[in-house]
Image (cartoon, each protein chain N blue to C red):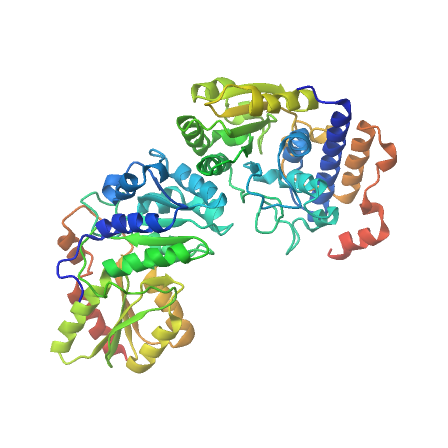
Length: 314
Length: 302
């Protein structure tokens, strides 16, 4: 059975780095002065010789990672997602993605649950930005087992990977031996009236929303899409051809991100009513985590309300 | 170590061919950076024909030296050097900027012998720092990480982030060469954004600095020899090569208008003729653009 009291996801990130470090002698971790926050510091403690501190210089962080990949190493340049996305995008695009280098990029502090740091540190656009880079893979874990599986798969993936590490404790969705595959979604709960598509922490909110809908006699199908790029087009199409409507939910902006990816699939394969849950076209404020989810209309109740809206549009 | 006269002749010939091929490439490709290609002809010729430990027959050799072209718009000169070195037939240069051919800016996935991809300025030194760190992680490796930078890209903060890290990690297996040709895309460096006192900046960042005339083959060779074998260990080394943008073609020298500009075939022919006269090779003044078949190819798409 899944553990009863899960660890915070960033702790699992740090532990998995150490675990992979034991298996892959060519794995290196780079940091830009945030390793105790991101928990990349666990790797530093275990393998100090394979940990590279670059200081507060994110453009350099990703350039150096490219150079290490060019000499046969598998680098994890670790920083907050905002700095990877906003500060070092050119380096990630041209030094890493263009030559399809084997760099694995963890984006820490994503979406609403970061600290109370506000818009400068809450990354809401990383899914949208990373998704449009050719050769890049993008994933957002639904729970700890998913994150560990994503990191294991990333090591075996040829080319660059961007994966999100949520600073939050998520309920377990999967067993410890869960396997992650690119382009494969996971059907968590079958239903017939509406499809709830979640990525990252929002998948467990979708499950909560499904429980609420069940009380009103609505049967919701819940699918976790840990792999955002490539996305499981077939699973989306199969599900909505049965339910006839969908709600997407992401811990990020709905502009260009996961919900947009879902809309692309629906538009091209099987147009049905869709509502997207996530941050609207605005920056994120400082505040308590629960307050932020309420403020931005991203609570399970908001997903349930959106589901009723699309049901009415059928 | 004294370079032989024979070697100097060989390098001079390579520099001449790099210039010719760059002009032809940019003409055929209808796009490209002539000034910054011509200015580093000697730098590339000295590197590929007397310094870089590389083997075109074994491009994946683990102990090979790596060269990152940070000023990746100078790709025509590098493509020419790689062809002359034997990584691919000379004819490949005529695919420059054609669909499926050599890319406008460096793309290592499409070009044998290229060690990195680039284009946006200011990024290459970081990649070279990563390569230097990677080489140091490996055992029994004597290879060096080389990086050619432009002077103008020293405006970019990323360059100095990389410089700081290289000194912090005592990367004495890293040799940067600056093609200090004094001209940026839209004017002189000192008019747009001065980088002086340049050598002092590198020294302040913890680097060993050698300044040299970047068109003097003997001096360049000696500087690169010093950088690799003579200077005390423990610091990264930068060779500031003072050059002339557009060197070899009077009209393009120190002229920002020839930073990005493709000559028409007639102008290209005049450029090639001028180059061959300068190198005492008047009989080679004509480019293959004079060949009727090639003319058809060139004008065919118009």
